[in-house]
Image 1 (cartoon, helix red, strand yellow):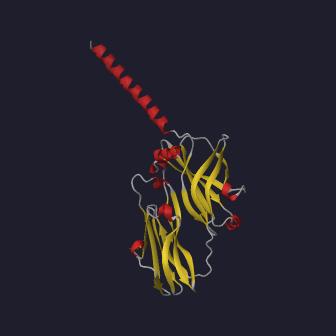
Image 2 (cartoon, helix red, strand yellow; image 1 turned 45 degrees about the horizontal axis):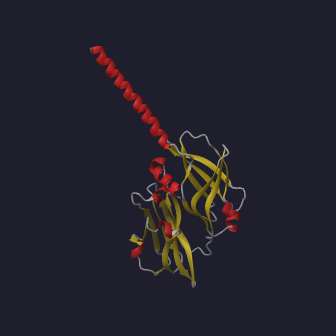
Image 3 (cartoon, helix red, strand yellow; image 1 turned 90 degrees about the vertical axis):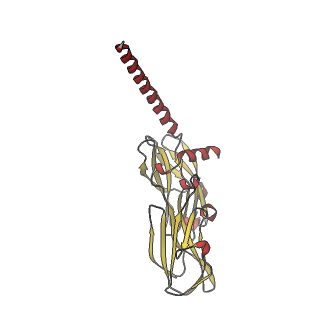
Length: 274
């Protein structure tokens, strides 16, 4: 009788192990990506800032290699790029980056144009047409040196600031972010520690005055935009010599450090809906 009980117990134990094993296989397969997921990016490329990253997520055991990249919105020219391994979650996914360099000649040629798509070609013969967000080729040359950057910083917490000293008397009419329709409700900007919405413009400032611009990002729990990459200029709109111009005080940077910080399921669902 005791022997029968032991056999039954062992059988139940083996059955549980088999169920757990099958469950783990099923759970793992549920996480396998059919194809890499490219994150959306919002950034500006200008003279002196001639490269940008395209971050993507792939299966951790993927053997596919990217062999070619095209940016159809700026022609079929050769794209100078390199690929880097960023991080992985140790279980399902690996994060990688393509660093794309745009030559100064092409920045000048295609200035004030948006890059929103990329064609990615893989070693297995597959290719993908990818929505990469908005990469803006800026025309940001500054004629006069009217601002001196005293300090600038940014952190992995996605906060940063820049303190400028004015080299001339001038009037400042505002501070604006690029891509306002995308980020204005997820970024908090302060001017000299006062929320931007509470600052009264125009501000008449003197030579030697300091002007601090700081930022932080804040997302609602289910906001899909927290899975994107941002490197967005915060521009001072100023008036000098009867001309209105803009000067980039700092770049508001939002980085994702690991696949664990990305809602993969939300990105897949959004892609399937679109």
